Length: 371
Image (cartoon, rainbow, N blue to C red; front, side, top):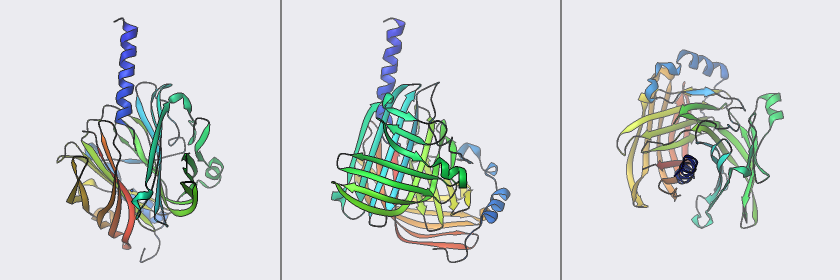
């Protein structure tokens, strides 16, 4: 085989592997509000540099350019935009746009998942895999189109005037669709991981608009979330991860537990967001998550009850919650496995004496296994 044919064969093989690998990269404050001044002072006193960098996800502030499209020139990488809405009427929506590309070669994957917390028969999930040529994205701000249709539109004018992050997300398959507005409530971030950058652009957001199920349009309002990742390298050697959020009215905890093997932990992360203020990276050594009960699905045992505890006295943060799975949606990724959980959260988050109680709060988390 000559060199050009060999290179072509390698590229085709890599593309096939990448498609199977990444189809889803995709769940009451009792006192006064916390102010920006309080949280800024707290962060200045306790910077992430005091943590062990080898096992710590360290966040950094972002701009719209960070959350925009990033051309991959040196190697095949993954970039994704993930939006999640948990609505007051019991419905939930997830929209994904995923790129697997190098320069102008690769694939664009779109995904829509709609489901109800009480009525599993209403669940709908589908995806399409298309040529990278169908994708168009701005490299200055988040503006994403596929096949000539805008899916993600960032309100650049609103950001220029007020620094507020507002997105319109409009997407559909056949008789199912979403038309949603996400308005951020606190600053987002990204951190270095898996060779690239990953993090919540909107750790807390208001979401409103409509979803369409079997051609029936339903108006919705609720809790929104948006994350973005870019430059994620392959291969991924980790066994997998657990990831999720604990979102209250004024505080939100972003957490992750990354695993080298089923039993050997690689790293953990916890970042507390305060509404209209900022975020606090927590000491990973102070984070504990225990998996107590299991179920059997897709030939694997999956945890169904989680006890989550944080006592970071240096940063005046205490978290004690239990998370119970109410639905587990299995979404196979070729050789890999992905489960999207609908969970019920009970417990409390405390920061600087401010206490937020969560009682039967419905949220989403995920379990990803690469092997």
